[in-house]
Amino acid sequence: MTKEEIATTNVNILKKSNVKPQKPLGKKECQLVTFDLPYLAFYYNQKLMVYKLGAESFEETVEKLKDGLALVLEDFYQLAGKLGKDDEGVFKVEYDDDMDGVEVIVDEAQEIQVANLTDHHEGINKFQDLIPYNKILNLEGLHRPLLAVQLTKLKDGLAMGLAFNHAVLDGTSTWHFMTSWAQLCSGATSISVPPFLERTKARDTRVKLNLSKPSDAPEHAKSETNGDVSASVDPPMRDRVFKFSESAIDQIKSKVNTNPGEGANNTTPFSTFQSLSAHVWLAVTRARQLKPEEYTVYTVFADCRKRVDPPMPESYFGNLIQAIFTVTAAGLLLSNPIEFAAGMIQQAIAKHDAKAIEERNKEWESSPKIFAYKDAGVNCVAVGSSPRFKVYEVDFGWGKAEIVRSGLNNRFDGMVYLYPEKNGGRGIDVEISLEANAMERLEKDKEFLMEA
Image 1 (cartoon, one colour):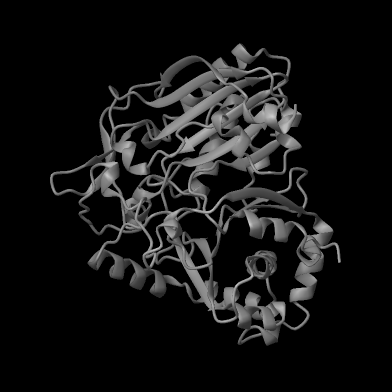
Image 2 (cartoon, one colour):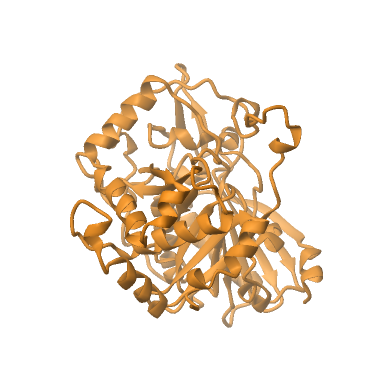
């Protein structure tokens, strides 16, 4: 298929249905906590997983997935519920047996082959029709399912598009759910690790928010434009996947760790994440051609399960992440060796301990602010997802995915998703969204591409 043909691909919907937990559970509810609430004005979190099918037909595979979904929802019933508000205006997740459950859309795009998706490094903007709930705010979970699954029959495989309500769960919980669902589809009689559903154990402050409809959210907030109307129009964006092999990752990490003491107040070696983060931050800053005095922000959404006091289990179901920000001037960043950037990132992460988390929560609770998904900082590079998520181990019984990608929801100039490479090694796929001209320069940056 040519790029033009791919861009006009038609997806034909065959059937829509809903899946509930297999057995009645009665009425259950749990309030959303401080870690959850900021994401109400984000969009649903989207993932795309593409599989080659085994011996079973597409129709048999769909039924197997729906049967497994009904089983796994007995444990993860919150995903079969809706958002609600109590009498005091505090948001909660509520489930009742008469609710619709998870939306499942079955469709076909018979002209698309698996190779069209796996060989395409331009992100997945051409295939957004394979993923449900485009541009749907999490706040709409008051009236919509909290999870939508789209199963598309390809010419030689299956595309699984997923949309999770980000106000209900983060990446760790997302992949815990997906792994558990796959276990049941593969023949397990129960999931290996049940979810820890008592999210108020992490924070039990009741916060009232005056939000009830999408127009209450700030997703269309205008930037200050100094009278220039055109400045409020988002520039053209491009998405691109850059694959860094094990050897490239080792080279980056070795370079950054040549003089670790130069970039931090101690000689703690820089991790793979810190090293790759510095590599990406510098390259994107070069590509943007910022003035030396312009600020640039590096933002990472850090898992706080082991940082909070008391620590929460890895199986904690919900959002237990916080954004950590690092800021410096572009000239200072680019005139220093790479360990300068790595050191700032390392220190920011190290400082985000239980005390810092507590202070951030108290500050937010005293004056709640609902931010749009783009509010990650000026000239920012913001990292979501993690190469530690074992996304290619989500095997429903017919092999690992050929590709795992994020949808277009919540993307902005500087958004980065990190995924492990498919073959199980230490390589990392770096999915970047950038303004088109900056992306063109990044694609020619031999230092970034490790071609120098």
